[in-house]
Image (tube, rainbow, N blue to C red; front, side):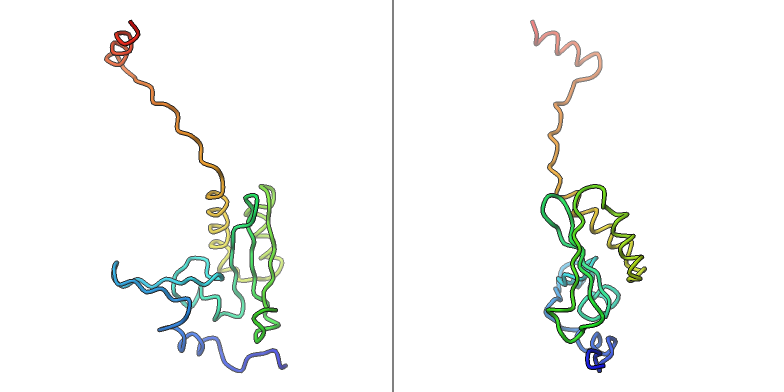
Length: 153
């Protein structure tokens, strides 16, 4: 009973919404507000995605060798920030989006965030792959053949 918070997450959000450590305000672009919270999947400053407010939150970070690490927030130790995170690493191609979906479904963990978790993990994996070199452009058409034949001789 001592592990439960006495303050609702709605009240925490209303207090922390205008100003918190994760908030990034930009005057350009119509005054957009973003979040640097590691448990925020879309980096939008909103109640749904705020990891520090919700009792259940999910975050995805890059891991070594092209894998991803999924961080989930435990509901048991809400007052102990060091003990309320659980990390699972998905390495390789076999445990990709399907492994993440299965893990969150078996744990009954925020079904409304599954699409965002898979999108973030896929983007991190894609960005960790080395880029391919672009092939040299070939000339096409009759004029290009004429130019190529004159250059050869």
